[in-house]
View (cartoon, rainbow, N blue to C red):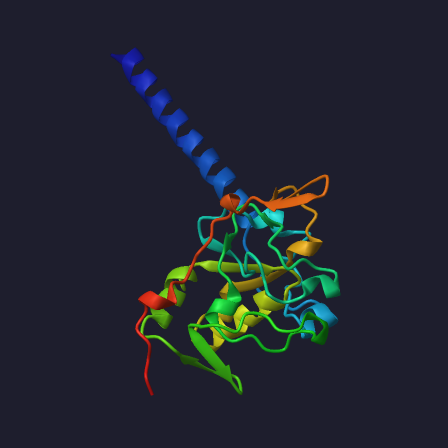
Length: 229
């Protein structure tokens, strides 16, 4: 009986010690990965594009695959704008693993692009922006936005150069999202990390795009209920 009692006590102690060790290991990892509060980069990247100082193209790999976050790339598969004129790519030639594509030009009318880019998409949008105020164009506009950008999650935004991502954050914050949970992590054109998914293929003189790799959120405006004024 004494031997059995000692064995049981030993097993209980081992269980408790193992649990404590696991707890401290887990929590130390969690503490190391606590998100810094959003903070603007210095210079043009911060003032003009709103790109984050701490989580951006060079560091985003450290913050991927979080259960408390969603990842959105705001580019179109093929943007009508001439982004090659500013050293970019009008096509979505690649993306960071884990990011899902939600085209910003479908969310709200685009303004403030560099003159060299020219005109971009000018079709239907969920919202219309005028003088900093956003007005819904469809009864489902807010519902769609809340589904694509959950308010209870951290939201990481990326695009080609950082512009569409910054515009998306402005839209969300203006409509009631918590600005401290939204990060503009910059532009894919400048990403050199280890989680790049290549979409563009060039063989000899032929270029194709593997858009089947893209987790793409389409917005079917024909199925929505237009708000009439």
